[in-house]
View 1 (tube, rainbow, N blue to C red):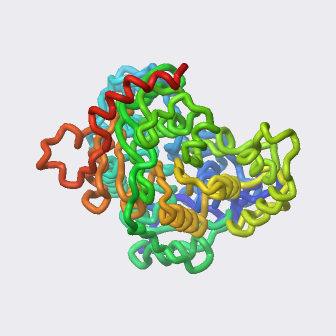
View 2: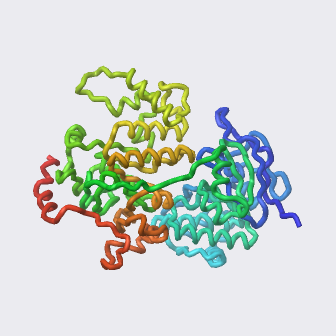
Length: 533
């Protein structure tokens, strides 16, 4: 018996300013299945689903729902067809409760009276754990996502679209979500999962449709494929997926951080009493749910954000030191921030001029050596495979992946002995991502100390030597990657496990987080305030 087709894309195309985001897409979704839409960043996954959910309309092609041509010109139209999309960035009102957010926009006044009971019934049916009277601003990211999913179910959605649903979840939360998704499938729901994570595709989906550069490539039964084959379809060629932890003898700490206190822009605490050190020849990974203080940690270390506490080099507190003074001490620091066009690069300047920003020194005069910078830009473009018309192209005109390559290339090219990097492969294709990992390993082999903020726990566990886990700005512990698991890291990310509070005999993978003695630190406390004046 043939399966019922609930959604069919026929020759769908969508372009922005003449550039195709989707071109001649043909994909079908069956009733009671989980279909993964797999592709690299920029492959057109979200754009395609935004057309199904009524946010965009295609320039060419047609969408059929349950065999009939659909006219979807708004999210309200999509809802009328039983389509609900849970976006990566939630659309909730912080001061409202879960129930109030779920029924928001419902015009039937009579539905308000029984709203709580109906919402509670949906939650119990699929196994959601949620306090429906709790306000959004008091919720975790996982709870907010639960509200969004229940919201579309409350509107009788039978076709659900989940856009990168595990991007901000711990492994335990992701597994729980997958269990709920499977219950929905058993109930006859059809689920589309937008993702770029191969492990998720293999574990939860029935079929996987692959997009590459806006075009449809193929659809495969998940049980009949593997991660390597999926990768080759995504990239368009064979890829060596070898990621390794380079084993070298770590050298003494280049920087040690003690009792670090950092505030967010709104004045609330971002980092609370952090203690750790960065060794030369070692990669320290940082794991945590989004917003756990990663951004503020990076900015404080590189001197872009005020902090209290101590950042020391060979026992010298460098707080308040100028960039020139820090260099005199032998610290050559490079920073690859999460905000590549805000903190990382000047978007209106050319590639050449962005390289000059790293080396420009006003004390040497107002004239700059643009020829050398242009030569360096050409070498960077060639080494990293940057797609650009020329070295003089403003970086804002490049794609996100190419912008990231310029930023990484500039920072690595300055011969650092400390690298602070946040999500350095975000937006890059698989080949470029593994090239970045190889380059960081090359820097590690040069005894460079590396702080690596990451979001993929599999990468952190495979690539880093140790992992520091943050939860709401506090350190839950620093563990050796060879002696821990993804599940254990997940428990630490939510605060369910705190290594710093465990008995010594239970700290199986624990890594000490300070080298200086209390006497050393007492001396620093007496002298540390001098640099602030």
